[in-house]
Image (cartoon, rainbow, N blue to C red):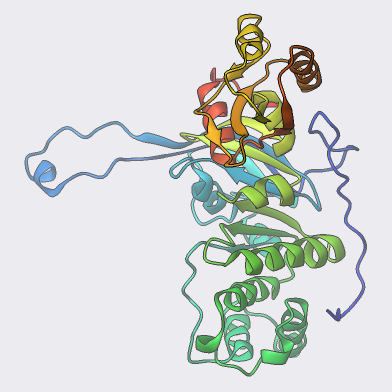
Length: 364
């Protein structure tokens, strides 16, 4: 993609093994004990009967986060965990009930206008594009609504379209765009204000796998790599959590349960599960290892159709223990064709972190 101008490289360095940034920098986004409560919905019959209302529910409960310049930071968790509400507070759409937050050094309550100038948001299920207008006309309309100076409007619209690789289709009606092109146009619209921080709520939910990968590559190379943009995204996507985000925070019922690189969280919370392909799944060596606590079977045995069997097992302790288990099986006469690590899914990781929750946020 051609760029309108060169920019400085990002200031964020990848996290160390403990999940902390490699050097001390001022956070691009900081939240301290951020809290938001909502009253539960009341049925009409209960309002008529003056039924006593249920107490308010904390949708976001004392959330504390630091996101650093040039970082891709993911918010993970089940529906209702508080991800979208956090985004709304950071973008000044709603005010917190308690706690503080700053964006690009500006307080979200006392300097809301400056926050809106530094941040742009692309919500999930965004439907405000006019499908009868072209991509350029949509951006011109939004630039006017955002009060972009007329002298700069054409330059900014052209720059945004080139940045998201839509310059060649700028005159095409949005109704003829693919879902991936529409998502890029929404990002282009957000870029018109030249934000330092970009909030993305499930940006690839409606995209096919190839389009999703292309969008993530664009975000990493163009926005983060060349424009030093900081990205916060809420996601349920495994590829985004493990391969795209520098760090993630796992939320449940409005609270942060753990933060760190997703792979490090997997090491901390996930038991090492392996897939064994063996000649005889009933070999006595397996029972011996189980009695010694060196392995434990997980799930039913699967026949591979060529005289071999596949089974899954967990090996507690350090991952290097798998080599010891393999050696003991071979020494006991078991025929082993393959031993491979089974990666923990994102859903399993979140479930295990929630299950291990003791009420205290943990870093990895």
